[in-house]
Image (cartoon, rainbow, N blue to C red):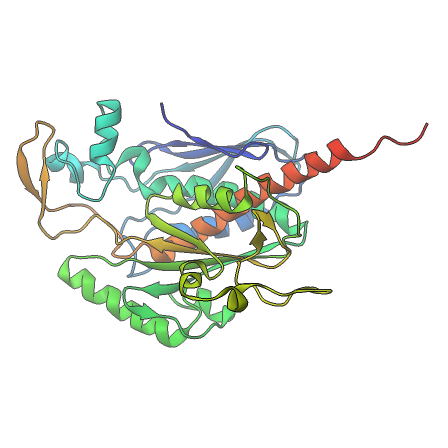
Length: 359
C-alpha cells in the first residue's frame, strides 16, 4: 500500500506522476465560506516551479492552476477542493536507457523491492514533481491561517559550506537561492555554478518560521506538534534531518542557558522553537530542515540492474543541482498544512469540553 493522504481534519490527498498527464490534489476539511485567492495560489506554484533560474532544472513547466471542484463564486463550499496542474514539458525518452537500473540516492530500488513494479519515467510518484500538489494545497492553508493571524516564512540558510550570517527578509525573493543574506546568496550561486560544471550537486539547510501561532496547539503524547511537524517535513524526499529551535545545538549547552524564561508578556527567548511538551508555546515556530544533495547527477555511479548485475550509471535528464531554493515554498506548505490540522483539532477539542449552557 502507499500513503497518499496527509492530515486528519484538514486532509490532503495528492495524485499524479512526474511524467503522467499532470499532478493533482484534493483538499478536504476546508471550512465553507473561505474566500480563496487563486492568484495567490498561482504565485506559490510559480515559486516552486522548475525552470525559474539558472540554478534550477531546465524542465519548463508553467504549473498553471486549474480548479475542478469545491469553489463557487470565489468561496469554498465545504466540499472537497480539487486542484489540477498539467504536465506540459515531459521527456520520458530521457529515461528509457536506464529504465532497468536503480539510481543511487533515489527511491527506485526501495520502491521496486516493496511493490515489485515501478514507474521509471522520472521517478513517478517519488519525483519532486509531486510537491506541486502540496504547494497548491498549502497555499489554501496559508490563506486559512492568515485569518487566524498566522504568517509562514521560509528561507535558505546554508548551501554546501556557505552559511548565511544576516537576515533581511526583503532579500529572500530578490535572489535565485532565496537567502536572506545577499552576500551569502552570491556565494551560494557561485557554489551551485561550480558543481553544475562538475556534473555534481549540493545540499543545504532551510529554515521555516510560523509567526502568530497561539499557545495550546498540539496533542500529547503521541500527537505532539513537534512530531506532526517532523512527520510532515520528513515526508519530503530530500529532507534527512529536522530540528525545532536550537535543535542539535542544545546538546553541548546547560539548562541554565537554554530554558526559555516565562514572562508576563510571553517567553523571554525561544531556544525551544515554539513548543513545550509538544504543545505550541505562543512563541514563533522555528523549524530547520537538512536537505540532501540532489541524487540525480551526471557523474558515473555504481549501481545494479533489476537482475542484480553490477552496472555503472550516469543519470540523464534535467535536474536541479541544488533543490534548496525550490524546496522553500514546499516546506512552507507542509508547515501550513500541519498547522491547519492542528487548528481544527484544537477547535474541535475546545467545542467538546465547552460546558453546557445553563437551562
